[in-house]
Length: 465
Image 1 (cartoon, rainbow, N blue to C red):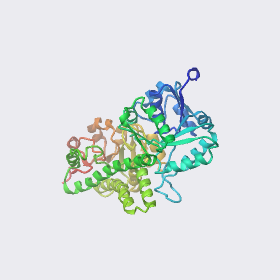
Image 2: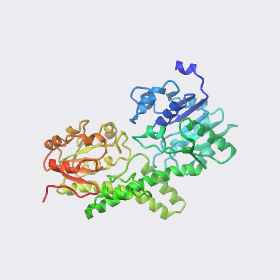
Image 3: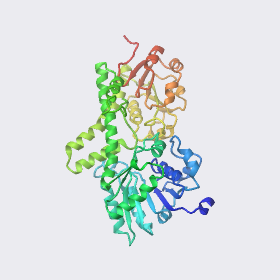
Image 4: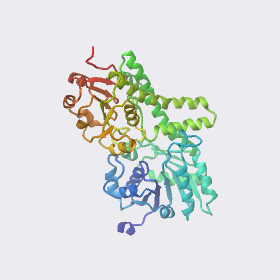
């Protein structure tokens, strides 16, 4: 703190919310803008303690190195929300906006109670003009509600609201922040709105080429985030739908994905067939989009996007149904090893991970489940509370596979490709099965070892007549 007191900063940046978006984003801004004082506040004291320790609460490749460079210099973590609001010139709002579980819109609409509480806190503690930046994923025209709360109580203070949605992919968030495809900033096309927009543009322009900073009206920016995630999830559900057809028609989904992805109009990204998408954004944002469309009476549009989520749920069910069917229609009393629990590689995040539903479905069939994952075991234990005695957690994948009847690959961790599967095969019950939910393994080699191999969207390789 002594170093902070010696320095004079040009502006004070505050981020309310120390989660997967706020933490990395503010660390990147602090790294690239040493003349700015950046503070992250949160009501969760334990999370703030972790950010201030040598063991930050988020696993993201490269993030700890950045935090270590700037923490205590121009990046600070605190639970003093009121004090942070008073000092801030620009406030990023990055609080959780989960799907509602109650009342009107339950299961689809965003739960905005944390967001609204934050708006009232900003009003209560502001002593001067502020720029408020929406960083949370929010329904279109949420900024309008934010403005009403702020302006109804402003007491001569001027607030200008901007939308600056994040487009980070977990596992590559640091690269996405330092070398983004684009940064999107939405503002009212008024003199005041454009002036606030310029202040935020100038911050990002420290390291991002100006042509990659897209400016739009406020509502376009809010809606763009939901639409971007909906389009990406749609591609995953589309290829997964075709994977089911491939298994019936003896086609190979990898060959089809390569063929269609070679078309420049389509492209190759997000065409890997899998057990399905997960994470905190895709399902939540699509359901939010569905709810908005329904609220405007756009039933056909809502139905179209809702089918993306339904296809994802179908793919997860189909995966477990395949395990049961191929293992002689019963897995009761059998140990199944899950390789991976995080929703994707290079993160410990398990929110909406297919592994959660797969595990519960396997337990419904009275199987025993052994879970291994390099980063997500603690989160897995939280997700599966109440299943004690039927689920075990193993850091070592070799231990997880020992005496198992089958392995189900859930997460595309690179280290799983390098495992000694001959050793694993020897330790398993026979016949031994592998269900590759990510198509990352060498199926031919596994077959030669002795496994019965079931990929996604491809003909199985089995030793059964």
